[in-house]
Length: 379
Image 1 (tube, one colour):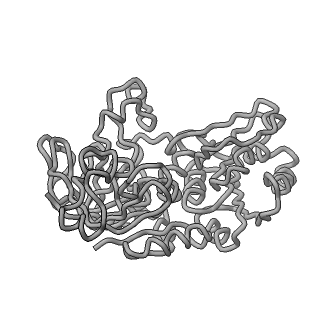
Image 2: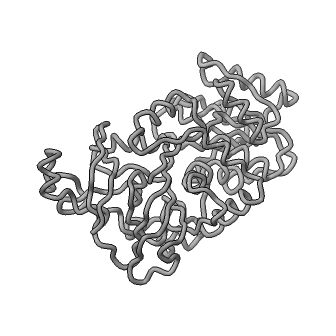
């Protein structure tokens, strides 16, 4: 068994730092010494999922040991992690839709991750192993079967991808969620066409990645929209051709939509990407696109929100892809290659780095909007 220092959420908006025991690795499992973990809005949301969790789903590190049958890595390898772990054989996987794998539950769900506290630690923390969660006797679940906000993680080999020596751990960590989500939404889901006009709403890590994807597809114009001037400056560095500073009082971003139409001969953009995670802006990209244009809900809003159905007129398409329609074995080698060629300025996306014990500050900075991406560095 391996001891790990981990961030443990109680499922009710609170978390603590705990020493946990990782179960012995089983067949097909990989024990990883974590080096970096991204800080994401999903991590914040996971605090209210009603069950104890080891937090974190964006991560990179070094392989410490492997279980029987593992073929994707060896001890000492540098690796990054993919949170949408495909089974490879279900209805969706067989059709190239690994991102919406139907049988992800057949992949270990994290119950192997933690055997709970030792008796000594139970006394010290006031927590009993018998009621620490739903992951089996005395165990926790790991967020998305990963639990990257810890010094060590035990993960299914299907989550593991090689990380070249030239790619920093913090870059590898954010590739596994934010970058893939934004880039893939433009490239895989919307299939942005060369010479087109694109609007990106929200210029955090996901929005900047959507800009990178649109640039990769050779969009002619990329209009970046945000309420934060600093993020708009960063958007220009990432490939935006124009920026529009929005007002928090602009309901549905309708004033911005009017400006977009003025800039596009009254017609609207060809594509628009919502990357804000603000429920009230879920339908905003529909207001930005022309008739027969494509609006994309990138941030995965999971709220009931009213929608003016006139925004769908005429022949507009609204897509809601998961994880940028990711196919791990196709997409991550491409992203890693583009980074190493200098086409993805992801070092600039990591705007702040924190020790594990500074998660409070990282969450605060995330909510205040001063980060494109914050990353926890683990040693």
